[in-house]
Image (cartoon, rainbow, N blue to C red; front, side, top):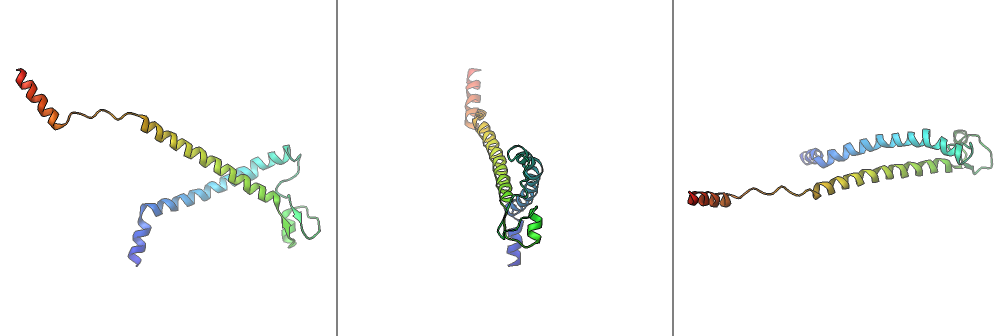
Length: 138
């Protein structure tokens, strides 16, 4: 059973999947940073007129908290809709980037398929017939 497991892990598909998961996790962190550090401040400044999106929440215990962290430390139940919106934005950005990658790959495949195959050279039989023809001409 150990040999079968080793063979399974050593297949190219499993290694490709592992590399894809690791790259995906790193890409997710980059997108989190872009959304949280670049886009959300712009959105909160322009659309929400300076309201901080990261602390956008509804406290269910009736108390007012200035930050989401403060509410969580107090053990309050909160609806952190700002965090939810940020996660949705992350998803949309990742989906759009993946769409662009797949679209680019599909375009490359179409270009490769559109190129006509070079004409095949004469077969051995055709070469032999050409030699016979040339010999008869002499």
